[in-house]
Amino acid sequence: MDKPSVKGLSSSNRWCSIAMLEEDESALHRDRLSNLPQDLLLNIIERLDVADAMRTSILSRRWKLIPTMLSKILIMVGSTDNLQERKCDDVARANAAVIGATRSLLKSRSASPYTIHHLCLQFYLGKRSKLIGRTVAKTIAKHKVGFAEFTILTEKELERSSSADRFAYGLQFRSFLGTCPNAFIRLARLKLENLRLRESDIPCILKVCKRLEFLRLDNCDMGYRSLLAVEHPRLRELEIVRSEFERVDLNFLPELTTLTFSYWVSLHDPLSFGYVPLLHTVSISNTALSWHKMLKLSELLGKATVSNLHLGFESEKIWVKPEDPRELSLVFSKLRFVNLAAISEECDLKWTLFVLQGAPFLEELCIRVCDCLGMWDEEERRKHAYSEKGKDAGTNWEASDFMHRKLSVLKIFGFQSEEKFMNYAKTVMEVAVNLKDIYLHEKPACEEKCAYSHQRGDRYPRTKRHKIWVRNNLDMDMHPLLRLHFRF
Image 1: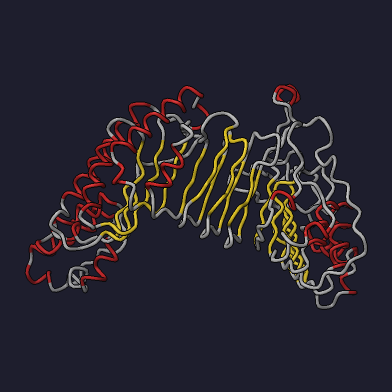
Image 2: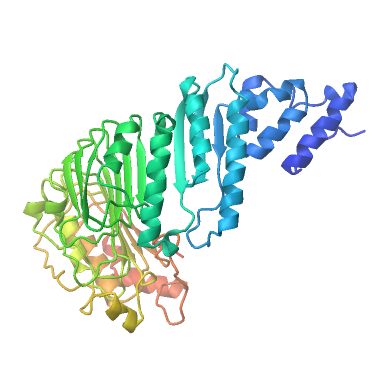
């Protein structure tokens, strides 16, 4: 008779198969999974979701102890897709499931000598969420949690959250933090959304979360055009998205390495960089309206010297002002990788050369051109004060003669065999004397929500003949060491 196998079964069927094997003493010897070393068995179980991991405890006496030995516990409330409407009853049921799983798992470990190295909880903010906080606080009090992470969602997603909703959610969060402060003392990662807080709340969060390394604030602020000062000795990654802050001051963040900042309402520079000696990756994106100021990177970045810079324009107005390379010599002195994303198709590309000229050690330049994120309804554009001028107005730039010796890779997404793209590629080839690879991509791939679709009449070189035409027009024979790549 062939040996029974659990391979290819669903998780529930797989464990039922093992249970049936254990009923037969002779079959037990063929149960290779149960005979695995304990560390390896735990590693396998930790890859299951919480519900399946808990079910394994019924299989045998040995397996009964498995949930109390897990070093990694992930309890997720479900989808966080902003496009999915969250209904009140669904939120209540989902939170009840998380509360039940959290209390069951953590209370069962009261006598367990094993440490939870990673505890990740995702739940909805509300009155009953305090039960999660109290349970986590009790577990932490017994020194059984090493690394903890909270993702706290609101009942209404971004698109449906009014100012009144965000104010109410802010009160709920303040009550949650005040009731369960000990649940936050081991947090290494915290994600919050749709909160209108008081001026003292975010500094309080940073003070309580002494071990915090990652903080995401999505649609959170302390009032329209409020000021936020951030200071924390251990914070390494900071994401502030869709805020209504007038300015965010990064005053003292000695461990900060990565900053993501998107969508602001300020009439002035929305960021200021204080003591951030380790900062190397900065991503800044905005849908610039007619009243948004064009920012000078030399002033915005200040004394921060980053190596990886992402600037996103969301298919709308270019909000960066080209500058003389002498003004950029300090902030671009360590710059190695630049990604200029979601540049509208109506924009010229010459202005981007100021980055290349101002960053003598740049190794890779990526240009992404698309109109998939823009607003095209004329009435909506007037209503929301989108720019009525050209989207690249104010970006005129005539590069002086210069030579770049470090750039090795040029990537162009959304490439078309048109004069604008061809001339741009030729210019980069002329100034970047050590350029090794040019990648020409059809799809812009701006981000996950990119709505790009192949349109009839586009001029991306797909056929062999068309590719040869592009090669000839770029004079590739004059650059024998340069490789040209086409990516569909």
